[in-house]
Image (cartoon, rainbow, N blue to C red; front, side, top):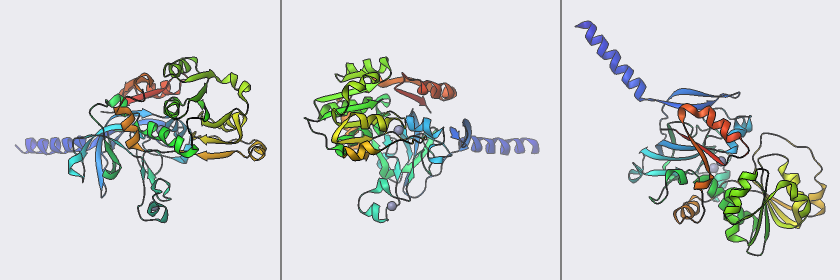
Length: 337
Ligand SMILES: [Zn+2]
Ligand SMILES: [Zn+2]
């Protein structure tokens, strides 16, 4: 009798233990590995989200090389379902989430520049575990409900599409601007082509360039850039490499604007005189408006399904990362739950 009681207590504790655990991908400063972790507990104002799909971004690949000196669970592109939330109506909803979690009280936050708050944490990038896990927490205020017309496979593109929507704002692009996109700017190319008539993408993967051409955007091999020196009013640098900026300086017209998108772990030493001589403006661009991105996805104005290279199960996460590193890959996702 006593033995049965002990067994039942142990069984109960084991069940409770496993119910509070989750699987995740962790970066320990050297390498990525699969871990079993305690599910995150929400802080005040936070919701718990069960992650359906998480996208691998070039920033994640850079984090795995030491970018931001981040350790923890990476991943910031996701679609999930709200499990608990201080905002009742969100429970059970499919959501995407803005990645910056600001303090809300500093002078930058009070000026509406929350994404630049010095004490912010950033989902899966700085001071906060991210989306390569079965569960994550974010303030309920960061979450956006996904319209039923947008599938999980489309919604996982919301965060990078929002970032692409910010580029025309940062560069002041109008319909007459000549615009070059350097590198894998497949979302940027589509958003920019809605604003400007003359957009050219320069890339290194023939397969990727062919897909971009199908969106009606002119695309050329990067080896052709020599024919276009100082020809573009705006050059958007999305190469994911420190060499992208010098290449952009070659293409931009005097008094033109370069929009830097790449976040790299690597450094570069080079002569910056061309920027001064041609009075070039360089602006960085990071996160953008989720509402605008979700509207574009809902109206199917930006096509993302062709950009979904592959979806892997959690068990095959190593293969997913390997696939994401391949030159011809657009977006590789992991199904987290
Ligand atoms: Zn990203
Ligand atoms: Zn702040």
